[in-house]
Amino acid sequence: MKYALNYRSGPDGLHLYDRKSGTNILLDEFEISSENWSPAPRQVSIALTNACNLQCPFCYAPKQLAELSYVQLQTWLDELNTNGCLGIGFGGGEPTLYKNLPLLCDYINNHTKLAVTFTTNAHNLSVSLADQLKGRVAYVRVSMDGVGETYEILRGKSFASLCSRFERIRSIAAFGINYVVNSQTFPDLDEAVMVAADHGATELLLLPELPTPGREGIDPVSVSNLKEWVYSYSGPLRLSVSEAGADKLPTCDPLVKEKGLRSYAHIDASGILKRSSFDSVGVKIGDGGIIKTLSKLRPIPVEVGYENLA
Ligand code: SF4
Image (cartoon, rainbow, N blue to C red; front, top):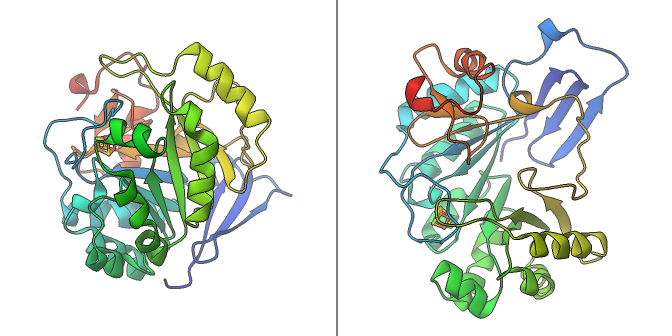
């Protein structure tokens, strides 16, 4: 990965970020006036495709076929890069099913200062794909909810086959585990931490299950158990909690004033800009680009569907 020190300005100060080492520096000794704040969100997640090789019961990704064009993505990535965005997270669906993923990561590394991460279920990650992504990605997030039978019931894939891919993943970049927490997966948390640490993971991101059609999301007993578990956690992995569903769990936010669309936005596989990946509300990105579309999204009340706004 090419050395690239990036920066953005915002209500918390001047933020410097080096995608190679992962170093963040915040210069907050002076105030930056709002007209000089970077217009792009700090982090943008992009669903490259809705296609997926699994059928997880708690999945909230849209199911209609959709995929973003490589040429369109290049334009958006250039725009985000010149407007102060620091990182892009590719997801889906399953981003490794997007045939231009290596080309896209290559483009980002050679033409921008953005850091790339992607979230994967790992079952489509071939040796050849891992080789093409090596050195072009800052971090990989691997979905693993529960161990052994729990994982296999939920993901419909062999747990041994997932474990056999961790070395391949580690050859691309450092990686962490995304863990959907519900009453089925909570009892496996301690064992999951040990398995993940043994395979070289550095972080565990807890994702309390969100409601989806036909499922209610995490139940109150599991929420309470999870809180207790988090407060007494002393395991080897860095622990983080998704803001969605955090529900008074301890979170660490060093950029306390950079909230909402200033800190994060999502682009779905149909080119709709949203506040988050599980949001049903958004605005179709028009010819004016992402920054113009952001200003349309900001005042929209959450109960309005994007179908009416495109
Ligand atoms: S792997 Fe991810 S995108 Fe695919 S079905 Fe499961 S949760 Fe949904």
